[in-house]
Amino acid sequence: MPVKCLVCDLVFVVADDSMGQRVTCPGCGASFLAEPLAKSSLGTAEAPLSLDDAIPLPPVPVPPPVAAPKSPFRSGLKLGLVLLLTVASMTAVYVAFQYGAGEISDSAWQLFEPEDGRCRVLMPGTPEEIATADGKRFAVERRFADVRFEFGWQDVATTDFDVFARRYGEELAKRRGGTNPTMATVKFGGYDAKDITVETERGPWVERIILVPSKPRSRVFALGVGGPAVTPESGAVQKFFLSLQLRVPRE
Image (spheres, rainbow, N blue to C red):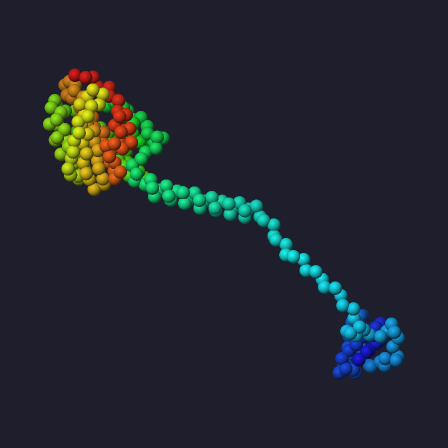
């Protein structure tokens, strides 16, 4: 039913059961008692609009969602994580294939000249002196390559190098907890030398002993390498053995 606001004269439609009840004007917000108005008493301009006469409005276009701008921090973090995972994967592969391989990088070798040794030799790291019954002995442990290097000497009275070498090989096998020592005769700078190989639980132990005759006692130098991947022909073994420089006067 149409009603007319008593304050602003706005004509609007209310429900039939609102007649005689207090209603609120949608125009000015005034509250009054609704009384019916005859259509004949309403002017054309005052006639309330019906839903049938309303002109439909065009639909309001909904803008597409706008993607949030990419944060340079998030992009950098994502790239950093990808690089980190790549490096970790490559490192894992390298470790899997290189651990225990017995290979030593060129940058690890350094010249070692022991006091009163009258010699010098390349060793893959700073050696530590180890206790021996006679003479001197130094060692370097390369844990990643799983290989150990030892160098030293002892002064002996014997001149029969073959007898000394056999006894030395037996003692070496006991000292290393190995068996089946094998021996090969080699020459080193004009001196007599023996390459002794002993099988141990950690792998082969290869040791070269060199007899340098002198007075009053001869000197025997020893260079040993041990590890799972060690052989007399290994690159690290040969580099170690051939690096020895002697300054002991010959007999």
